[in-house]
Length: 142
Image (cartoon, rainbow, N blue to C red; front, side, top):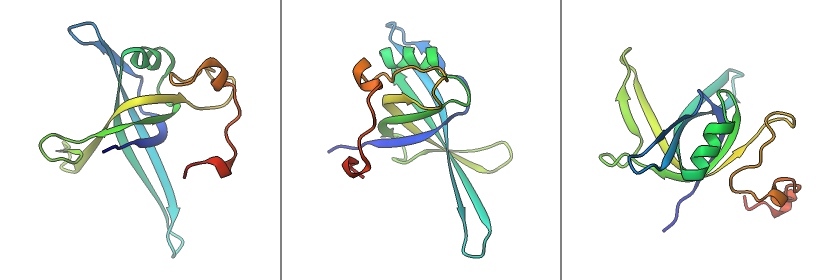
């Protein structure tokens, strides 16, 4: 069995890097994805979904070094369900509303944005690939 999730969003705050007791680097990112629409009656709608992303080892170090709040990113990884419920982690906020946290373990983090913004290749790309043109739309798998 195999699963993969891909999200594109903006960092909600600066990455937080720490080390496990054995010295392995781990970085946590909070990424917001937004969706906007207009209903049939013309009413605009907007939805923001938050993801908590965990990166390990060299990917964790790179993310902590180059990313900052507001930066657009593409994350590829696997969804990590809550061990007790099998779904997102759910909690009640101080104001009484329900919140949910979708947790992802990152395999790839691609830094997005305009040229000139911290132009750094993604962790998964080789130097030759980072300057290559994207494939034509007809070659996209989705």
